[in-house]
Amino acid sequence: MDEGVNEMKRLIHGDSIKTGYFQGANTAYSSANIIDRKSGIPLLPPYVIKQMDGIDIGFIGVVTKETTMYVSPENRKEVEITDEVSAINRTVKLLKEKGIKVIIVLAHDSAKSDKAGANSTGALVEMAPKNR
Image 1 (cartoon, rainbow, N blue to C red):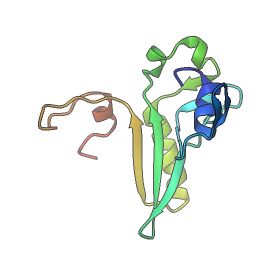
Image 2: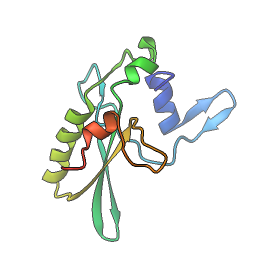
Image 3: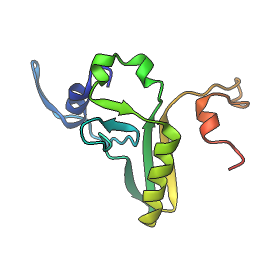
């Protein structure tokens, strides 16, 4: 998204470029909180469902609300970055309605911890406290 919505879509889906054809990413992308300003719906699918060992697993993608601090206003004028927790909770409800019982959140967000990986702090920790 650093280069704008059109470039993000080109990197995901592929397109012709000056140096030749680029086939795009070979993976699924999702983000429940990057919202298209015109349509009011997520720009990317809010979740992806994969089956592993016969179990359906829902993966919810979100980016940090702080993305607005790192991506220029010109490159994000077509989208709104909404609150991560609200987007996650809304998408969890959708997945549960589909019968998905295993849900993983893929958050492009930050957290800090000590060298042993303990005593985590930051927005990501506040979104998913241990006592849930």
